[in-house]
Image (tube, rainbow, N blue to C red; front, top):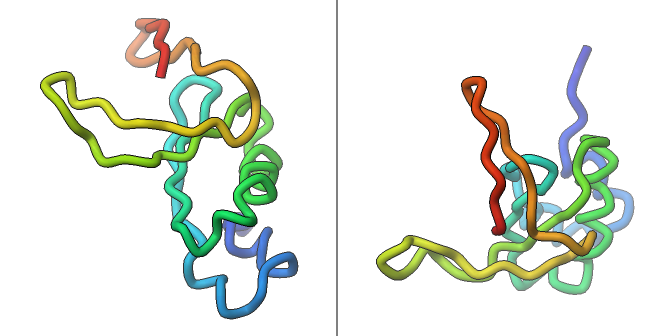
Length: 101
């Protein structure tokens, strides 16, 4: 069974010259996906977010990381592409964490 990549899902909806800019990966924290969409794809960001949700039905919100990690607390800035909540519960090693990204 082969996995479908994000590039596979968007290639029919993007001009061929933009396919190379599609991110190869995204992170998931709880029910939030975090992706870095380059400026060349800004006009397609909502469509890309929709495709990410179609890949994993548990995702409720898609965030675009718009800055590098910064400051003493090492935080990034995000833009909401899809969904409305940046609060999620993330489970790891039998522990559950409630986070506001």
